[in-house]
Image 1 (cartoon, rainbow over the protein chains, first blue to last red):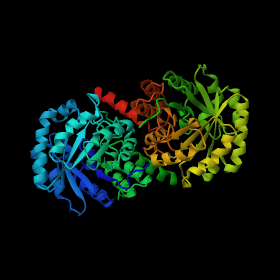
Image 2 (spheres, rainbow over the protein chains, first blue to last red):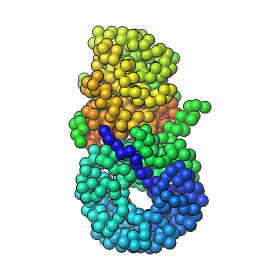
Image 3 (cartoon, rainbow over the protein chains, first blue to last red):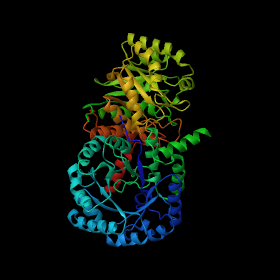
Image 4 (cartoon, each protein chain N blue to C red):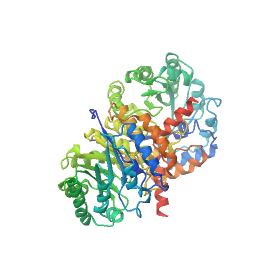
Length: 304
Length: 304
C-alpha cells in the first residue's frame, strides 16, 4: 500500500463552514480565525463568498473582510463567486483564486442556483474566462457528485457531463464534492478510476462531508487513487443543510490527524489548528465539531 | 477493488457500550433493546459481562439478564468473562460463547486487569479450556492493539506475542481492538498483512473505536484485506474512558450504512436498528451517538 507522501489541505471553513451559520461572526473574528489557521500552516484559505447578502447574509462582509488581511507570501486567498457581478467584487478585493460552483444533479443545481445545468455552463464559462484574463486561477466545485438529496445516487458519468465544459473553459482545479456526506469508499474508488481518465489527478481535489462518518474512509480511497488535494473546514463547521444537527464538512483537524498518523506531510500543525477551532467554535452555532477536537478536550479532562 | 460480499457484524453494545455508562439501565430495558436488535437481524449479541459488580456495577444484573431471554435459534448469546469465577456464572446462565480479554500493551494490561501479560495467559488459558470443555465457543479480545494510552503506538508483533498462547489454547475467534480509537487505515493494512500470516483471517474480527473519526476508514482497510467480521455497538454507546465526552465504539448503525452502501450484505436492517438506538439512548448517559443517527434525525426534521 503506497499513499502519497504529501497532501495539500485546502481550508474552506471561512466560506463553506460559515455560510449557513445562524449567527453572524464578526468580521474581525473571521480575520483572527483565518490568521490563526495560516499561522498553523494553512497555505490555502477560501475566505468568503461574493454572493449577494440576501442569499448568504453570514458572509455579507466579504469586501470588508478581504481588505483586512495583511497578505502573506505563499498563501492563496480565495473566494467563491456565483457570477460576473461576484467576480467583479472578488477581483476588486484582490483575491488570488476564485471558485465557481454547480451541481452534478440537475434538480440540485436548479434548486441551489435557480438555473438548469445547460443555463449554468455559459455563466460559469464567462466567469472562468474573465477571471483568468485578470490573472486569477479558477477552481470549480461540483457538488452532489455522489448523491443528491432529490435524485439519489449519481453516476460517475453524470459528473463528467457537468465538468467537461468547465475543463474546456480552463479551470485550474476541480473540487468534487460529496455534498450530503453519503458516499462510501468503494464508490469513490470506482468513480475516481473513471474521472482520472478525463481529468489529470493533479487537478482533482476531493471535498468530503462527514455526515454519516464516511469522510475519512473516502479520503483513504482517494489517496489510494493518488489524489493529493483535499478540502476541509476548521472545527468541522458547516453542518448539513439537508439534515439539521448532523455533521457536514470534514473537520480539518480530523483530516490532519488522519494524514499525519499515516506519515503523510501537510505542512500544517494539528495542535495549533485545534486552538484555532476552539477560538471560532463559541462564535458560531455549530454543535457538531470534529471528533479529534472532542478527543483532545476529553484527554485534557482525563489528565485533570 | 473487490470487497467481501457478506460481513458478520457482532453486536457488543449491551456489554462494551453499557459497561462504563454512569446510569444503571434497567434489566428489562436492556432485554428489550437486545430483542429489538435481534429483531433487526443481529445474530450475535454480547449481552453482558460476568465481572464482579464492584468493578462493573452497570452490568451487575448479568445473571438475571441472561435468564430473561427466550433464546432464539440462529442467535449467539455471548458474555464477557474475566476468570474462572466469571466463567462459572456464564456457564450457569447458558451462554453460547464466552469472551476473554487482555491487552497487547503490558502497561494497559496491568492497569486494566492488575496482572502482567505473563500472569494473564495461564488464567485465560484455563478459562478457554474449561469453556470449550463445557461446549462453549471462545472469543478473545486483544485491546490496545494499535495504540496504548500509556505506551503509545504498538508494533504488530507485540499483538502476536499476546495472542499466540490464546490461539494455542484453542480460541475460536480473535477480536483485535483499537481501544482508544487512534489507528489509521495504513497501519491496519500493515498490521493485518502480518497478522493473517499467523491467524487465519476467518478467525479475525476487527473492533474499531471512532474516537478520532477513523473507524470506518479502518474497516475499509480491513475489508480490503479480506476480514469479514466486525464488532460494533448499537447507538455508538460506550464513549472513551481515556477521553470523556469523545466517541468510543463504532456505532452499529454507521457500520451498517457503510457496508450496505457498498453492496455488502449483513442480514441486518438499518432502519430497525436506528429505532433500537433511539430506544436505548435516552436510558443512558451517552452524549455521542453515531453519525447516521444524527443524520437520520436531521433528515426527519428537514421534512417537517
